[in-house]
Amino acid sequence: MKRFRTYIVTGLLVWLPLGITAFLVKFMVDFVDRSLLLLPLDYRPDTLLNMHIPGLGIVLTLMVLLITGVLAANFFGRKLVNIWESILQRIPLVRSVYSAAKSFAEVVLTDNTESFKEVLLIEYPRKGLYSLCFQTSTSLGEVQARTGEEVICVFVPTTPNPTSGVMIIVPKKDVIVLDMQVEEAVKMVVSLGVVVPDWNGRV
Image (cartoon, rainbow, N blue to C red; front, side, top):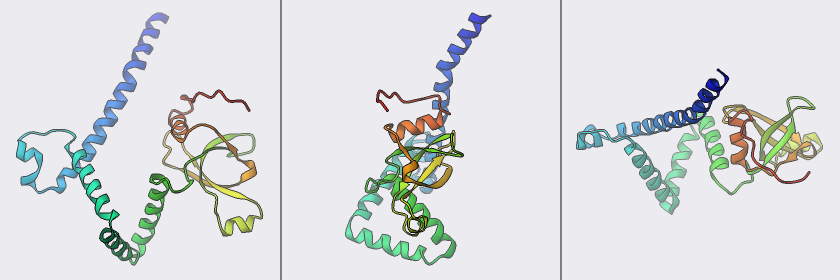
């Protein structure tokens, strides 16, 4: 029975990651394919080809993003974006949501900031317990001045969903800078600490 259980567990270790990966890929493809609904019915690939081809929504989405990026990168495109943003800034509720979403996207998707570039270790939720976190900001203005010491802002992700978490302001002297990459830290968080990146350094 012990050997039988070992074989079953080994089989699960082979098929379970494949099944989860296939499910997530299918979910993402189906989700993006819904962008095809933006096209008129007569011009949708399903109508023109008389058959459904999974993944065409990804092509359409990439084309829209590419065209938008090309237009927004030139002078007239930037002017249009500025006008559009000035309109959104006049709508009370939309203004708050849009500004926060834009700031977050700029931090995560661009390389011109130091945010989410370093993996840190802090004692949280109490002294003696450690949590992985990501540096988000070092220039804290009034917060910096009011605390009377050098502090940084960090994001502590929850597991297994690293997109949610808590923002904490901690003294820089209490932060341990790790060598692991952001991608490695995310894998560790998502895997509940099972996937630990290799490290050959010395303390």
